[in-house]
Image (cartoon, rainbow, N blue to C red; front, side, top):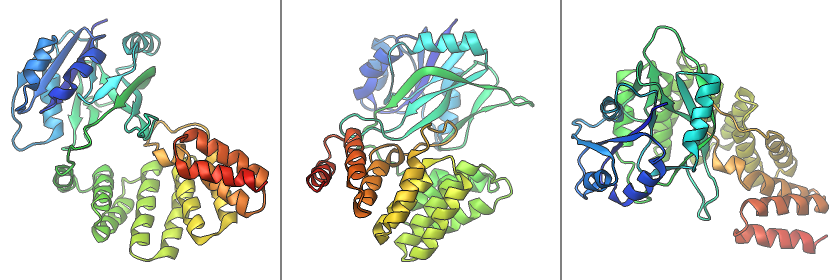
Length: 358
């Protein structure tokens, strides 16, 4: 089986050796450099990568990725798209081959750790489709691009079990290009719910609460907006907009709607529990945090946010149990929270307090 890696890059020489070490299990590495000034192409070529250089004007991620895919030899059995700030866990090729032999799918998703804590612990996690057969696939959308099959009938998506890709980005790298590209995507495809959802989220990240609310409401109203997980996320973002503009009761209604829309996802419960903690409604905190912890399997179709799968639901449960007079349980959940973030001084102090009050 021939497995090739392909990527796009610009001014990422600092990551070149680490990335090439990780991709060395592939049969070949193909890179499109889009205008580096720091010697990235030479650094990659010295490690055995095949590098082409081309500037993309106007810039859009899907065009760049499709041009990088064009570099991959026609005889590839599987193509693996990564970025230079991403690193596979060792042994990924063998696990991918096993998945291909047992499932024989035209495309595969792998576990993607998008962010990490300062101590290296996992943060945001989701499963991403970055592995596919050589022919019939293209990348789509100017930003937050996704792989799309060009055939008339849908094709199966396999799971590359055990294959895990970690994202270690440059913290100084700007996301300033995201907003204009997301606005472009929404203009190009105004009826596409994905474009509306991500644009609304970006306005939220930028602190433009009014535009965020308008776009997120538009997302929910679109006829094709039927994906519960994405809709629930938009509802949580609307709740945050309401909180930022002083509408707490309206925010609570959106949190409730998010939980009802996607009851199998932790995020809505945890954000609702956090809301109740601000209100000192400890019964509500306990109900929502315990509901979150009852969900033990991460969803594979949408983003698993770090706050929902880290210390937060355990910490909120501990606080609720303590305020409700159940100190033994407060100690138990406080200890669990600290296991998730052992260097967190507040969690250390909380646990010591619970134990001292027993």
